[in-house]
Length: 208
Image (cartoon, rainbow, N blue to C red):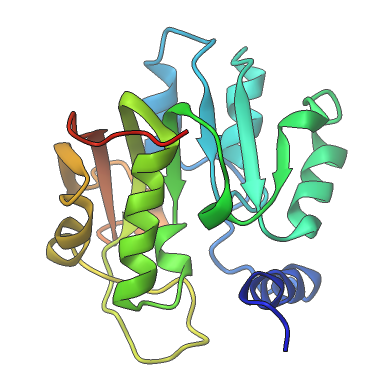
């Protein structure tokens, strides 16, 4: 029987091969771009998990950020990114499973990643614990979460959720800096996104 990792890799590879990537907007999302634009330290270590075509990483690299790591479980988007951004360090393109990844980061950028998992309590609890584990003390998790109804259709990825549901999980490991309806979403997602900044709780010990 294939491992869970290989099953997930095959699933997402097929989605990219068949171009069934409805979540992919083709450029860096405005809320994340505006957040990136106010960052001043361009040496901070940044992880973008489940990055897909990683437009956020491309934008960061264009702005002079030198320590950006792109993670995906599928090789297809990483290969496409390497072709699109040929000067990006290949050693910072990570083909790996988020849940077994090791490392320590100042900032993790979230772009529909939480919503990509089958919405079980086990998956969502593990996501939050691993996010905290990968962040340095005082590290931040920043990004976008879909504010749309959660349906029972297992093929309807990304899955939805609401502020209350997300906070149920996130507040176990993070202090909330801000988590509100996104005012600067792109037009097709207006009213359907939450923008959040979460700081790792001081009592969370990084194991790496």
